Image 1 (cartoon, rainbow over the protein chains, first blue to last red):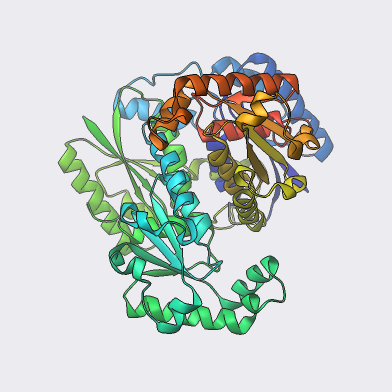
Image 2 (cartoon, helix red, strand yellow; image 1 turned 45 degrees about the vertical axis):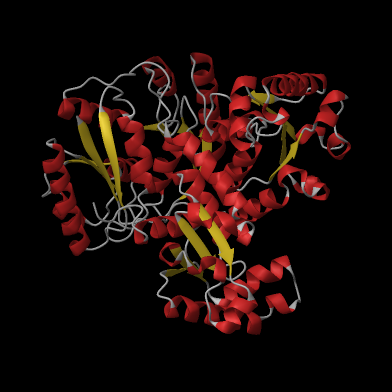
Length: 272
Length: 272
């Protein structure tokens, strides 16, 4: 049995989706179909959403679940006429804080303010451009502007991590691929030597690395298990020798890698 | 007065942060300091978090707010001894669904399952690599594999949007910059002509474009207002002439642009 789960919002639906998926993940034995319905910002769209919900209920033969961040009460009332179970993921907390803080919420009617569209926004886009300009050792002359420099063998996860950190957190991250030459000498590449305190290493299981490289360049020395094993072993030796913190990306998502780097490097969560 | 707002999790804290910020955004008149505390997965870390919360309370002279997604009850009880107001952002909904679905949650003790680390993960990383390979018209020969091809003048927001769509949704997006040559002729670049149904245009206010380009290349013809106005006008004429859907990115965040594109192109939220 697959139960439809709707994420409904008058804006992008990102909040409803993020929280809803986390809640559903607590029910591992059940199967859900995720359906995101953004921009439900008038009654007409609300009625259309109700039709979709009811159609899904009939097709699947099971009551859908609806996670919503709708602020407008008239729109919520329309959604409430559907056959789904509604989970209002903002309302109870806003009311709890209203009492605790003694302050009325500012936008009980109207569009949910996008919390991410703020003063940090320009910084995030600048950080994306920085990550692209400083990807893969392309322009080593701007490392002094980097808050973090990721190093690791080719395909250890550096680029997606850089981009995620830039897009989500506005952190300026460069990355540098450790070449065979760097690894053979167990030396720190010249370009990095003066930035040791900002280096962060990524490592990966050699078999996983082989699989990733094989997709890119099948049957090449680059994707052979021997080569992958050698490079990973040498990279880890380099990290240890120079006291560079490092992380195994084999079983981690890019979100987890990014959070861990922010945390371990003191850019988030540590000190005060 | 600045009130500390803590986002505490036994995992990355992304869910607590996303929902917490959306809730706080409803109180526009208040100022909050955001503090993310990930990986609180044992009692020792819980006690350390309590110390940070209490220190923040003293320094700011105001009661902090705590948004948490902690699953382990012992850890939550430690956090509850702090001076902050706790908002449990998962618990009430998990209990509501437990009743509605007649199913026990699978992990009342232990780490919150990361909803994003799933079968789609490899696809998201592949999509990032695709976006990078097909950025800025670099390798036009893989357009047939793109689900969406973003077009627009230089610095209209194509690259960050592509990367966001790839990282968050695993959508394969290429992008192509409209050059002066393309624009003067009001013709569709050859490389794109056979992919019309997958094209999506981005446009931007010329004054905003000028500001962005000036940062990149000050005092150049490229960043002059005349040139920006001409390019934007011609690009919009091209979109209209060929019936290409397009979006103004001037006041939209990358999250909003991405959501709108998924929605308008039918990859999310439309049809069934």
